[in-house]
Amino acid sequence: MSRAPLMPKATAVWLVENTTLTFKQIADFCHLHELEVKGIADGDVAIGVKGLDPVTGGQLTREEIAKAEADTGHALAILESKVDVQVKTSTAGPRYTPVSRRGDRPDAIAWLLRYHPELPDAAIMKLVGTTKHTINAVRERSHWNISSIKPVDPVSLGLCSQIALDFAVQKAANRKKVVGDVEAPRTLIPASEVEGTTAHRMAMEEREAEAAAAGTGREAELDADSVFARLKGLKTDDQE
Figure 1 (cartoon, rainbow, N blue to C red):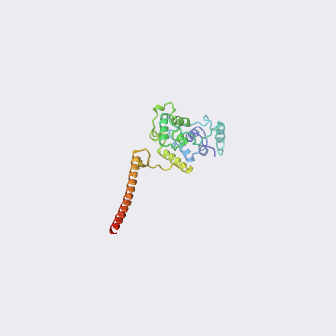
Figure 2 (cartoon, rainbow, N blue to C red):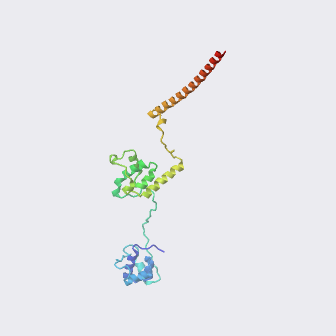
Figure 3 (cartoon, rainbow, N blue to C red):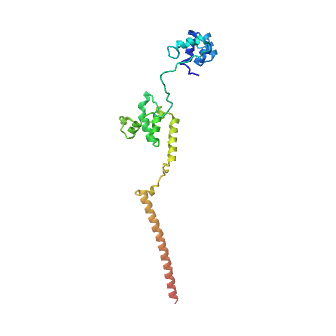
């Protein structure tokens, strides 16, 4: 089956009004139901729709119409366009950003670089609809308007959805885990273990004092034993 003409219902209206083609021929050409074409002829369907001439539109020739009118079994053949129009289905590359929002992109880039450094440039380009050159300019603070750039959430600016941002962040995190470039979880170090701090010096002095006290106790214990030994020795001498 050939492709449908542009504005098939308006084309059907014109063919009903200006030709003697059968309802079936018109329906097959316009990809409509035969009863729908009959409704157009009866004035029950497409009320107020202005007919579209397929001849001036380059979709039919008058010779093709005349041939179909002479033979009710002949199916109308639409003219193929001489221009090869290729429809781009790939979604790769920067996303289109409305002109009114393009001035907000540096602020969004600054926010993403600050709060989500794990995002690759390609993800930022897709989220905000920018270029690698602009990202590097903001990162290196060489952007022409760097003095006015302030980090702003791209979701609040309307440059991307929260779902898209969350997905990009999660994807970047998962990729980092797979590569094995995961930072060890950072924990707080007690101030007493950080050299050069007052707390560290106080802890060291306290440990030295405890060690000295322990040593003094042992010395005192040894001195007591020697004293008792001497006393015992003296007592023995006196008995003799």
